[in-house]
Image 1 (spheres, helix red, strand yellow):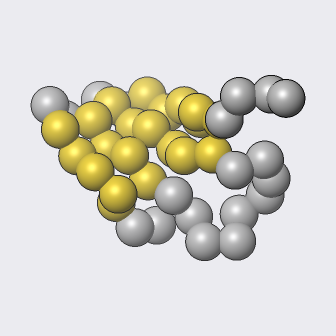
Image 2 (cartoon, one colour):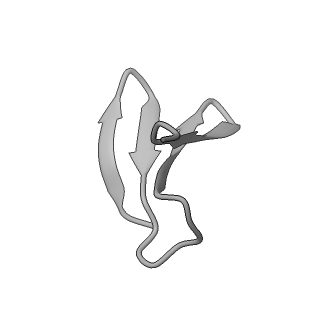
Length: 40
């Protein structure tokens, strides 16, 4: 998975053609999370 950004040990990644809704994966010290856009 390509890294979009990294700062202070935080990695922001995005899969190509991953499941919806559009989101990014965040990783920091072995912890992972997803960040999605706003709901409309």
